[in-house]
Length: 106
Image (cartoon, rainbow, N blue to C red; front, side, top):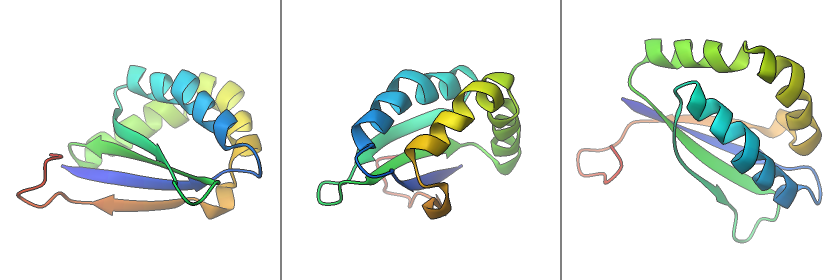
């Protein structure tokens, strides 16, 4: 099992709109495809920072879920353009993490 910590920078003045879009569209859509979303967060001191964490059982599962989400027509035809309008895709940082034995998140 591993986690994916995803850090995004929103376009100027778009963070609240991005959070609403994530919570009403993207997260529910991804969950409907089998993604496990552990949480989402905004920066307390950085007004453009948005972070979310997803969990995967294996690399094979991650590949299957990526395909299910990012190749779905709803993603390619509807959501993708909206994502590009709200976040700076050039500044996305994805970090893969493994929980330590005593981590509360497993």
